[in-house]
Length: 568
Image (tube, rainbow, N blue to C red; front, top):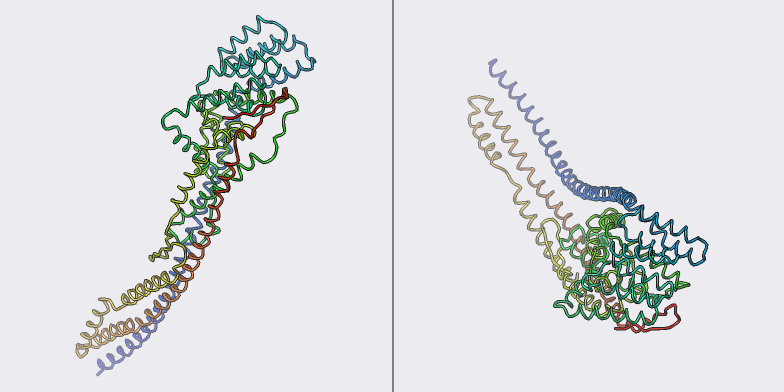
């Protein structure tokens, strides 16, 4: 009797505990649903955090590259000053001596002592003996001048010849100027010119030389072009050369701010953005060339001033010993200009690096003068002259580049939302994409709902629970255990509908948001195609500008008050 009473009491306690467990199971089930929502929210937050982190990493990388470039540029310029700073003193003496001689304010002995001191301070530098020779001429010391000229020629024949061609032109020594120019031209190979040849072209384009000398120079330049054009593959080489030059002006804009949905949801985005930047070259090139030809070029007030500008350029920018450091300085400057984007800076440097080669062909020299005046040290007059001589090659390169840009723009634009992918050409297939997306999400929803069911452990619990109830007569403990398993099975089973309803609710929300994304992407595709076509429409304007350019337009006025038309 006592045993039965104890058993009933224990059973009541077990029932009470099972009831509490059931309540706790319901609470846990609710909490699990809440956790599921928080997991989805966390995934979204993590996605945004990952995107922000990647942007931070890229920004931090650029900031470090920018800081490093600024530091290295300072070191390079310090090294230039340390190794070649004494050259600057020699260079400053050139125009100083000439201008002092013009107004006869400095004694010839002072000039001679100053130039002889430069010989001691700048060994192996061609300009030092050239200045000694200049001082010797000014003082009518022929022996000193001859010895110094021979030493300058020995150190650098080409620069010395061009230097004295300009000096004699400044002094109105026509015969001497012709002799020095003849010597300079005799040293040249149009396939392998030194960079300072741009000074000669500048002198021709700016009308520095006399009419006869200028005509002779123009003929030589034309002969160079004719000689180069006889080479096999010349035309293709010029197209490639000018294509690279045009590409060097291509912008590297991040278009994601204007097309945020395509940037986020299209696997084609990078190609789309690259094509939009590429097609902008038409307007960029048009603006660049118009800037070169707009307005008059103010002439130098005197022949002496014009020659002095060329002399400063010749002695200040074209020493090959400094070239490796100058290249590094230019690369670091491009990194600074690109705000630390080293890849963009390196791409631009690679395209314009030919302007920093020690030797280059005459046509490459023209290309560098037209497109990279800051590196090649070409004047605007030289740019105009170079473009006029190269017009046909520029048109061919521009036409090839335009065709390549049009071929490269993606015909189809991919739109990807999670594991769904759609394709559009012009953004006009919204209905098809909406149906495809809806069907895809319905299938995913059906699969997700179908996957929600009782697992093997639940069925095992059902079997065990029923089995325990069969043995309840032997012990109430079996009954309690059986009821517990059955309650767990029932709770799990009754929660299936709630989970399925939640999945359907989530997919309904996802479907609405996804359709809005598709609409936004299609709208951006339409805008993208419109903008691409607008930018591409600038191509004929650029060709029209080139058609209006001819060498015959450039009647160069020399300081001897005569005129000469330079043509090919």
